[in-house]
Image (tube, rainbow, N blue to C red; front, side):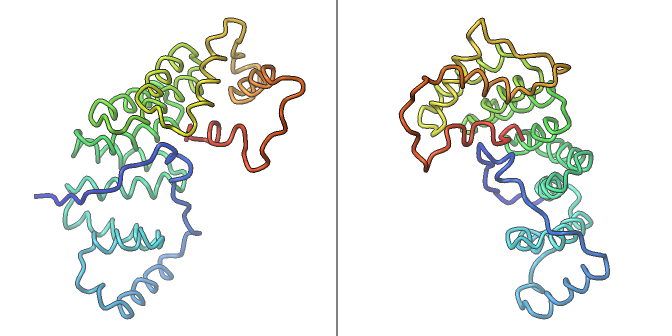
Length: 247
């Protein structure tokens, strides 16, 4: 039977801030010499399975070694969905979207009831520009695990950024802020919802060369009074809202 260790759920801003930044790739000879060194200096290493070593290296941010261990772990347990999920994270961090997609699809195939796996799959579809599949799996995430409310936020984000669909974005975001009233970005999200519901606000077509982010910021700027109160220098009015939570 496949082992499956409980893994920390992705956070709402995971798509950017939680994405792993990999070190520069090492040549195979360098990589395996590091692995040999780790075995010699770490008495715990010889007692661990390849999967456990992969997890440990992953959280120590020794990502190249983690990847080797996870690939080795698949030889012993090719049905472990979590191994595929970790490998997907590593591929996604390197922007190897096709590779990440393959790993996450396998993880979902093995554990279709996992909200976390569906969320990661949705992220990858977003990066690849596939709005339909991204939204499908973000919604599937929340359907499977209603504690992952942030998936609705991302469904709205995919609708807006990829489809330029104001109505769907408003629908998902209004549902999200009802379910997550304590979100620190609630006020900013509400302001964008208000802007999107304004019939005079039109998102320009892709061929215009104007990004959705620029259109939103221009629209919000129009609502700022001519002589506003001095901003708190410690705060960024737009921080967190357009910081690539859209992946």
